Length: 275
Image (cartoon, rainbow, N blue to C red; front, side, top):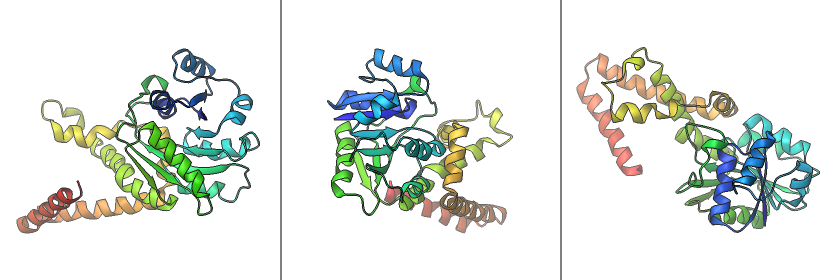
């Protein structure tokens, strides 16, 4: 099978490296900066590069790895190049907006939204890893009318690549869960290090500071798009977080040790139960 990776940044190049490491599929690759594509060929990250007009018609599966706003325009612009009955997917961290914009298009291929769940605090081809998706989840968000065989084919490819878990869900539920498991954590970390005391942490910080602040190392361009595209779900999570923070504040201000203790016990119990 021919798999085309469009966009050879952190995620795209890591997907290519994972495909080369764990499967026998032919890996085609394209990047806007041609020197990156040529380097990927020279380093064995991909098998072949060229123009989109040469590569897209060959691909049984095309994975588009761009920032959110660029994905839909790219697919629409090149819709006549994709191989008939092939699978076109993406790796974006939000799904509802992208899937809804493509839902009513008349394509001769099948678009299935996807999200390989992994990342780093750094970006770009140089930081890609063949191990980035080890123990990671791969989420698919097919339409109701997507043939089961096509969804199964994409899930099967993810399993071949070595993803530890595959999930098939709706775009809406994906975005609701990602707001909780990923986006709110970045909001919290960035809010945390905005404290005027943050620059003085050296000598006073240990594991708690490191764990809470880690994902404040953020690609602001990309995450701005992700946050705004998922605003409804993310704002709900922010509201919940603020509400819970205010409960702690109330207990501390009023020296209500029993309620403060109960809040912490509840948090500990939930964490023990859910992992």
